Length: 462
Ligand code: FUB
Image (cartoon, rainbow, N blue to C red):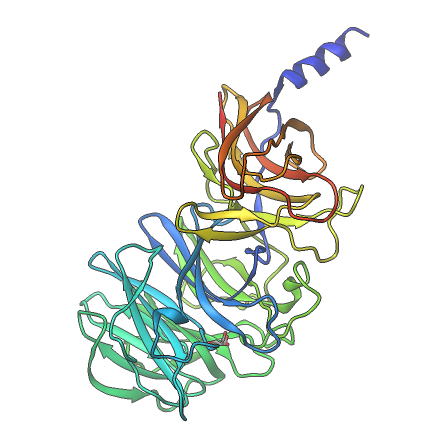
């Protein structure tokens, strides 16, 4: 009889019994619609550049390019807009910010993007440059790198071991040119790949791995899948190797991005099906998905079928004792009233950015939540939760739960008013001592459906 209350008290003092092994869920970004994933691994970080479908898109409506970063493939930090059509004032400003790719060389980062100019044909490829992966990227030329042409979309770049850089692009034909060392000019002819690669449509993704050259792409529309070809040389000839993802009605306007990171291989793309977590309407409101795979011994890529709802396992943990940006998110959604279950589709929080604060979380409503996966509280245990918040009206709370959306509550921060809009202040709450590696759910509580406070960063203290 005595044992039970003692055990209960011990558990309440230190919540640290279970360790999580988190996996990413698709789509991996839920705060807005993203497409055309272009991952770059640099200095131990995955930088995921994307194009961006506007919330009210009906057909393509694309104005800027965004960046997300991760060191564990499950928690993604929103790094904001890194370039937009305004970066290229000589281009059409109302639409056509399509599939980007960023590549690093000699301490600089080069962003290649398809945009459009007045007239016909209208498709051009532009290049912008930045001193760090998060930009801001500046127009390098004041004019297109690759001039108007019907096929001129979807650039992909690679620097070979001998230092020669290549730029491929095109829909429905695939073209390439040799880039100069400055990465913003080229030498030699613009060359069409002939004969074309079987099943090629658009969205090429060019890279070399262990002496083999790969060209992944969105396969022939419609519906699209992801196919790939291989070659012994960067300029081909290319041999079609089959689908990585099958043709599937769950995608048009697809685009692969492939990387190796921390011993695993990953293919990014998108599937309409996963957008159902975010919206009942799709045209074109896409969101990026990811799958992990293993190359076959001969370097070929297995047919993965399609992106699953559950994606890759986490490769690393998150340190809660250092500042964590609130926009570091494994999943966000909104719960049904009085139920610990999400709506079939329910936008959770989103992000905004300004020059003073950078990117922060906004549209925080009652019952919206952020899941952060694999938070390593260590053995000493956390005692206090600290959050930087801007709250122009009193009210609202952040409930901290462990492991599941209906898991144990370790503390609740009652959010005080911080003054006029844009005034940030750290606020804190005591928490039940928590140890070990846990998934953390920040559940926002208030009343009504209106957005409450904004949220910049958080940390725990011991
Ligand atoms: O996202 C706009 C366009 O649709 C891309 O540039 C293509 O690859 C296709 O995904």
